[in-house]
Length: 350
Ligand SMILES: O=c1ccc(O)c[nH]1
Ligand SMILES: [Fe+2]
Image: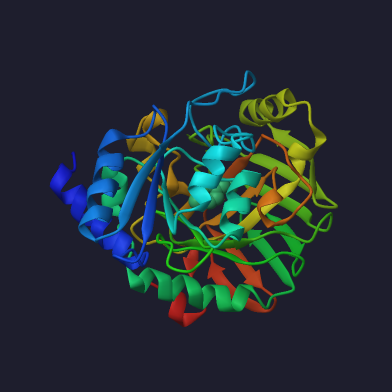
C-alpha cells in the first residue's frame, strides 16, 4: 500500500501542530541525498501551512568504512554533521528540526538539544509513519509509565525462556518517546511509543535469553534459535547458542572495541499499533523497524553507546534487541507480565 502526498502532508501537519509549530516558530528540515523525498516535501509543506519560517539544511552523506548495511542505527556516533560547525550553528538556530537523515546517538544531537532546539526524527517509510500516527493519548500513557520508571531503583526481567536480569537504576534519566517534540530541548521519534533508561554503570547482572521469535536490530532478524547472553558488571560476557549466537558474536567482535558489550538503554514497548509481525513484511532497507522497538509489552534492551545521557561509552556498534513474553518489574511493581502491559493502569492501551 502507499500513502499519497496529500495524506502525508496532513499527517505532518497534525504531528507538527502537536510539536508546537506555529507562526512564531522556525523549522529546519535536515536532509541528505538518501532522505525520503516524500517526507521532506510533506514536512516542508506542513510547516509552511502552519505559518512557520522554514529552511532546509542538506548535508553530504557520511559513510564510515567499517559500517555495514544501510540501517542508520548500525553505525552510531559519527554522522554527516560531525565536525560541520557551520551546519550545526544553522540547525541550533531553529526552534524545531525535522531530522530525515538521522542524528540519533551522536554527541552533536545532544549539543543541539541543549540550546533548547527541539528535534523530531522521521526516517521510517511514510506507510509506517501513517500506521503509528502519534496521538496525545500515546503521550499520556507513556508519561504514566515514565512516572513509575523515573523513581525506580531496580529493574528486573524474567521469562519462561530463562531470562533472569536485574539492573540497578538511578544514575541515568528516564527517556520517553511518544512521537512528537513538544517541549524545549526535547528529542522524539515519529513513530514510537515506548520508554527506557540505562542501568547504573557496571551494575547490570544476570542472564537474558533470546527466545525463538525475538528480534535483533539492526540485523532485522527474528531469532530462529535461542541465544543466551550472560551479563556481569554491566557488560555482556558470554553469548551462547548455535549459528545465531555465532553470528551475533562475530558481528560485535568485528568492531574490535570492548565497549560494544556494555548494556545500553533498557525499557518496554507501549505502542499497540506497532506489530511484532511488521518486520517480516518489510525489506531491510525500508527503515530502522520501529515496530520492533515499540510493540506493546516488549522488553527492549540494547548494547553499546550511552553518550546521549552523558555516559562515557562512545562506540559505533548499537544492538537493539526486543524480547517477547517477559515479566518486567520496576522495583516491586510488575509493569509487564509475560509480554502484557499490566501497570501502571494509566499506561495500558487495552
Ligand atoms: O527511537 C529510537 C530508535 C533507535 C534507538 O536506539 C532508540 N530509540
Ligand atoms: Fe537503541
